[in-house]
Amino acid sequence: MHQMTRELDHTFTAPIGVEVRGETWSCVEVPGSAELFGTKKSVRVDAVVDDVRCPTSG
Image (cartoon, rainbow, N blue to C red):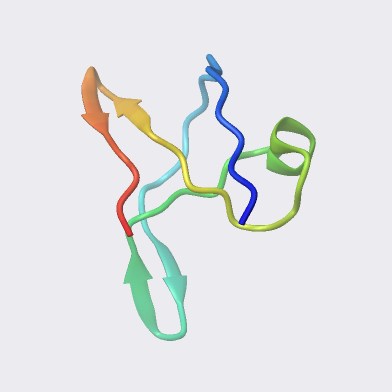
């Protein structure tokens, strides 16, 4: 698996929680993510939400 790490400062507003196969997952849909990350696939990120660090899990 190829893993690329870079710092990114991107601000947006979106609800937390996406329904996947009948369950709500703690994730967000980032507007313009295909252009931002260069892929249409899921991307795991470490994030900061309201000054609280939210590292990638899994």
